[in-house]
Structure formats: C-alpha cells, structure tokens
Length: 244
Ligand SMILES: C[S@@+](CC[C@H](N)C(=O)[O-])C[C@H]1O[C@@H](n2cnc3c(N)ncnc32)[C@H](O)[C@@H]1O
Image 1 (tube, helix red, strand yellow):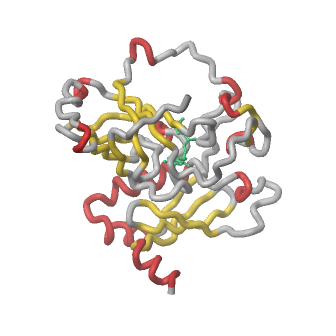
Image 2 (cartoon, helix red, strand yellow; image 1 turned 180 degrees about the horizontal axis):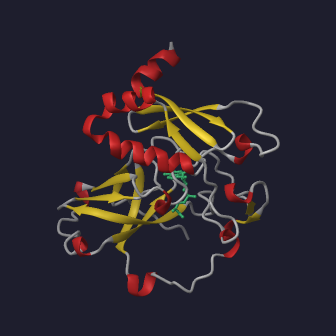
C-alpha cells in the first residue's frame, strides 16, 4: 500500500547541483541552509521550543536523483571501486529515496529555521524535522562497519590570490564564510571515483573542475592531491558565456 506525504517545506542551500554537495552534514560544518515552513499547512506555532535544541534531524526526499534505478549493491565513493549492500550505505539511490541528516540549528524564527552543516541540494523537499536528542540519539559505543577503515579522503586546498579577490568582490563581508565552506568541501575531494584515478594513474580526462556554489562558479585545478581554486566567477556570467 503506498503512502503519500507532503513536504513541510523546502530548504534553501548554496548547493545548486549534486556535484559539490557534501556527502554527510558534519563534513562541511560551515555550510548553511534555511528551511521555510509552507504557509498553507497551518503549522503556526510548530517551531516553538525548538530553539532550546542545538541540532535537529531532517528527513527529506532525494528529489534530484537522476538515475531512478535502484541496485542492491553499490559502489560508495570511499570504497574506491568495491561494492557493498545498499542498506549498509547512505546512498541516495534507495527503494524509497528518503534521506536523513543531523544538522546544527543556528536560529529559529516563527516559520523558519536556519541551519549549518547541511548536505542537501537547494530546494530539497523536507518531510519532517525532529529535535536531536543526545540522551537517545548519541551512541558513543556504536560501531562504524566498513566506514571505520575507509576514512573520507582528505586533499589539500589552496586559493589563488585572484580567486580570493574574486570571492571578496562577489560576496563582500560574507567572503570568509564562503571561503571556509568551499575549502571544507574540496578537502573531501567531491569528484566521483571515476574522475579521481589513482596515485599511479591520475585521471587522464581532465585536471580542471568547476561547480556551482550559491551564485558562484568555482573553478579549481587538481595536481596530485592538491586542489587550487583558480577562479570564482559570477554564475550568470559563466552561464551566459557557455550558452553563447
Ligand atoms: C550520501 S547522501 C547522504 C544524505 C543524508 N545525510 C543521508 O544519510 O541520508 C548525500 C548526497 O546526496 C546527494 N543529495 C543531496 N540532496 C539531494 C537531493 N535533494 N536529491 C538527490 N540527491 C541529493 C548529494 O550528492 C549529497 O552529496
């Protein structure tokens, strides 16, 4: 029997595409998100009391899954090519494409909540929001399965002087917040396994990458395990130039 749910709202984040969206919320603590409750659901007062909690669970729909095929075994990025059962992973490609993220609450207003440390694409439909309860949700004795021995890949990140100047020109007093989030993102090497290659055989296709972050196009070059952000363009200028 199917069940139908309506989103309680949609979250606004700087992640406009799946590439460059963090793989888990805690990995990019400087990222941000704003959830506005839908006005027509008559949820006035539903956020009262939430301000006393530091973190919340977001339950959401992976609405941007491009590939609708669900496979029983998948290749998580951290396994560098090996396969594992989908229920032993947090893959977006699940029989019911529902995600779960523990995020930090920054501010609660009547009809909206500001978060940091989010891993959701801009416009993601939120099905539910629940307070994170340290007394029952924090399990220090929990085992981390196959992920324990497969730490997230860490790469070095630098910004060229001209990229920093671009960033300051485009984001003003928000430049440091943007720089921190972009740096944390790139340190985790967002490239799909296919594009990473290996230490002995680096990706033969390209060493130049770009992704959209908020209204910016971030361009970076990979040399070994060093990512250098070389340019930060206005997204509309970049789009207009490439659509020409
Ligand atoms: C590995 S999932 C983990 C999400 C959540 N923390 C969980 O465990 O269910 C995170 C990835 O899902 C993808 N993603 C995020 N929001 C999405 C959306 N609305 N639709 C499709 N994919 C999304 C992004 O590529 C992101 O890197």
